[in-house]
Structure formats: C-alpha cells, structure tokens
Amino acid sequence: MRFGKTVLAVLSLVRWENALLSVAGVVLGAWWATGRPGAPETIVMAGVAVLLTAFANADNDVRDYEIDRIAHPERPLPSGALSLDMARIIVGIAAAAALVLSALLGAAETLAAVGVIAAMTLYNRGVKAHGVPGNVIVAVVASLPFVFGAWSAGSARDGLPLFLVGVPLHFAREIAKDLDDAHGDARYRRTLPLRVGPGAARLEAA
Image (tube, rainbow, N blue to C red; front, top):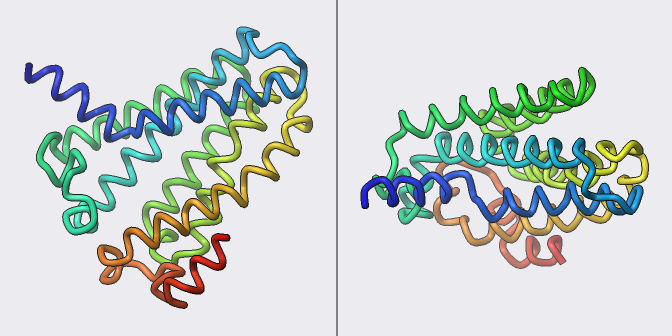
C-alpha cells in the first residue's frame, strides 16, 4: 500500500498529464512533418520529452515548496506524501536520464536537451519570480515538443507552425495559473495579476 501511494505521489510530482501532453506534441510534430509518427527516433524523442517534463515539474515543486504550502497544500511535498530529499533525487534522475536518452539521437539533440534543462533551471531559480518573463520561458519550452517531434522525423522546420500556435496558448495558460495562485504568490513573485490586477491579466490571457 505504501509503495502504491509513493508511486502516485511521484506521478503527481512530475505532472504525468503534462508528460503525456509532451508525448502527444512529439508525435503530432512528427506526423505533421512526414506523416510517419512511429519512427524509432520519434519514440526515443518522446521519451526525452517525458523526462524533461518530469525534471521541470519536479524541480518546480522543490523550489515552490513554501508557496505550495499556501496555494497547493494538497501537492505531494507540502502534504508530506514525498520528502524534499526524494523529490531532489527525482529531479536529478530525470535530468540525467533525459541526457542519456537524447545522446542516442545525436549531439545536437543532446545539446537541445541541455538547453531545456538550463532554461527551466533558470526559470525555477529566479526568472519565475518576475512573472511575465518566466511565463514566456514556460510557453516556449512547453511548445518545443512539436519541433522536437518534427526534428526526430527529419525536418525540425516543419514543426514551427505548430510551435508558433502553441506558444501563445501556453502563455495564456500560464497567466490563468497565475490568476489562480495569486494568493500564494503574493509574498514570493511579481506575476502579471499581481502587477496589473486580475481584470487586466484576464484580458491579456484572452
């Protein structure tokens, strides 16, 4: 029973729903580029996307522990379902596994994975506190699976139309999340809703 609860807590920590969306983005990008989403390279790239998503979300919860005690007390760390030490281990394993898996695809893909890890590390360790710049980083990174999928199929450029559609949609989603979290963010971040008010933030998201 305890093992099952731990597994569920880990899945919640890494946001398994977001991980599945990353896989869908990779597959859609490959299909959009070539109509063949089942190539071995695409499957490996989907694995990389899952691991990068797991890294970003777990690291985010480690950094947001104090905020989540107020805004999301039900999450694995503030609720005590997982310890901070265990979460840090998951962060490290996910990052390392993403680099190992991306190395199977090539040096350029490995460098791209390093770039995502670096961007999300900067976000979680400072940029996030400034609101909109952090929202932009997340919107760009969350839209990259389309490009990665097309890249795995042989033509990264063909994924750009999907990427350009995804960025503003993810940006709007980030603003909506900031609206929901405003009471927890007030002491730690300067998000758009806290800067301009909820009404103007809703208009910006729309």
